[in-house]
Amino acid sequence: MYKFISSSSKSKLIPLLSNSILYKSAYSSNWVSNSRNESSKFFHKPKTGNGSLVLCGQSGFRSYSSESDRETMNYDVVIVGAGPAGLSAAIKLKQVCQQKDVDLSVCVVEKGAEVGAHILSGNVFEPRALDELIPHWKEEEAPIDVPVTSDNFWLLTENRAFSLPSPFDNKGNYVISLSQLVRWLGQKAEELGVEIYPGFAASEILCNEHNEVTGIATNDMGVAKDGSRKENYQRGVALKGRVTLLAEGCRGSLSEKLIKKYNLREKGQGQHQTYALGIKEVWEIDADKHQPGYVLHTLGWPLDQKTYGGSFLYHMKDRQVAVGLVVALDYQNPFLNPYEEYQRFKHHPAIRPLLEGGTVLQYGARSLNEGGFQFSLVEQL
Ligand SMILES: Cc1cc2nc3c(=O)[nH]c(=O)nc-3n(C[C@H](O)[C@H](O)[C@H](O)COP(=O)(O)OP(=O)(O)OC[C@H]3O[C@@H](n4cnc5c(N)ncnc54)[C@H](O)[C@@H]3O)c2cc1C
Image (cartoon, rainbow, N blue to C red; front, top):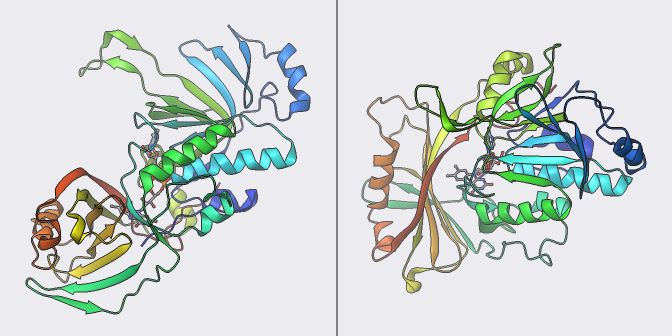
């Protein structure tokens, strides 16, 4: 079970975001508006510079400029990653803006072709954080409609399954598709004026001469394998923010670079982060075997006693079941192959009958943090 983390107040929001790191930028912009009241000054008196073009967007003000080698867009807040963390942060920022009658420009870049495309988790969802963020989520038709009805926990041996008391308390929780929820969060963010750019990977951290983060740049397009520029070469875009928030999820590439560069792991005095690999398939099974809201976790076989991990099986709606195996990546046996263990798991005599006659609709794998919020947090800047 993993928790969806968010927070109700701005001051608490940032450190609580799961897998996110906040960088206050020294990017002092007197031309990115902080409030509606400043807007006219901003509009008539853009920053000097080559090709500076000031546009009034729905969500406050952002500006475009053409720096020496690439286009630049300037925001108050740049968020990397449209997962639950990035989108909750964007929504919360805009909500606080509304309360304070301030207008901050907020953008989110997402490397998936669309919001939700890279979100894998078949999910038991605890709605507490969403209750705080969007209290009327039911009326606003959030895709959360299958309450957990039963919670089972089995110890597997090769041929048998022993029922144990469940260590989880899933009362009040829901079985959901996290990618659907994230799509819905994306819509809510856009309704509040957040600008979302799917299909763009943030590939570079931008720093100023004082080594302070000023934003990100998206990857260059049209680069050949040998690094040469193809005909369709297009330089990436710089997205600069007074604040840059990395919400890349587990082991984000930019986050890792910054953790290393600023020694955040050591400074935070946390344990080293540990990781697991989650492999998941969504199955469509026979109607007579389907029990919406049924939740099963297992431990033991096919993993040996030295390998941390276990399986999950969540009955969603429409005869769909999320079936997965999580294997901690500190396993000792160099020949262990998590994918093959997952295939073995599905053939267990207690699991196989459920899947027989069914069809795999989707599949994927993703790393996830095992280290925990309390032990492995890096230093917050
Ligand atoms: C198999 C599996 C099962 C899980 N089961 C549960 C469960 O039952 N309950 C639960 O609560 N949680 C579960 N989780 C964990 C849950 O998925 C995560 O905790 C949650 O998704 C973390 O949210 P996030 O926004 O921090 O990161 P993510 O959800 O990983 O989102 C990060 C987003 O950022 C994008 N991104 C990353 N880098 C860049 C970049 N450089 N540029 C642009 N975009 C970028 C990614 O494409 C992605 O869309 C599970 C995870 C897995 C893998």
